[in-house]
Length: 334
Image 1 (cartoon, rainbow, N blue to C red):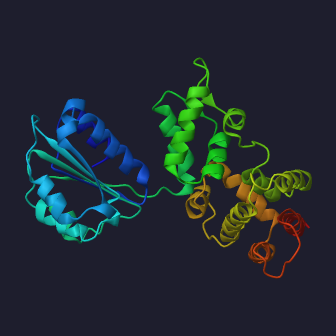
Image 2: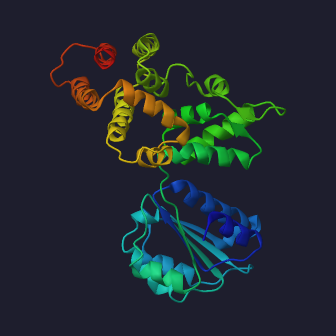
Image 3: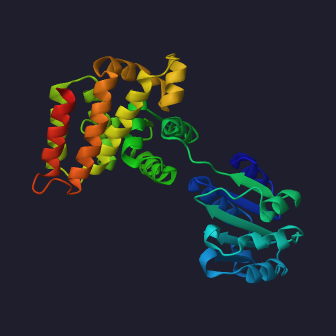
């Protein structure tokens, strides 16, 4: 089932006996779990009929005994197992899931990995008319689209450059991104609900001009002045711009550029798909590929590995990370 289908059923007071929520992306798993906790029982019913367990601190026998008990002064009891991936012998819950009690709603919150579909618990939930929700990790190139969709559902919008800035700063953690977007929505005026890079800089503290995304762009264009302005800013603000993150960002950028050189199908659609980038940025990569031939690109990737090691003390005693970055960027550009 999809998240919307589950939410729709719960709003209509249609409950399933077991919900197995699993996958690498915890955002939707936690969202559905919280929605169930808020909407199945009233506040009065929760006192006697809602039980929260944590995988590390509970066992299968306790859970099955609790699930087989009847609710008090309510049509249902709700049992939630949070961090279920830490529970020993969790697959033995199949003993209960094969024949669940209609008055019990069991929610299994299993995060950071998909539950093995070959195991007994998965098959038991499937057979007993339970809910199986798998929440896969989104690739980074899909996050801007997700941000746009998330904001649209709240009657807001965002510039593509602003969404890329958020991804650069927050990575692919949907929970973190959603939290920051909530803050931005609150800070925005009622008559203007469009998020821009300026609004992000003002409210989150991410610089719209001095960040790894802009450094990649400057290097791709061989814009010496802009690239040096950015790395000088990084050198003066090392805590806000960690060297390791910059190296990692550049490594992924030039690795994609290297891949581009050897694609047989260089259509925009295939480039976006193979490099896992937004189609909007295909032109930038194509232009950068003209400035960096395969040999130079391979050399840059080698330098990035070398300077990563030097930043960790290998072959380097006294040179600061700021100076290492300046030296590296000089080599890349010249």
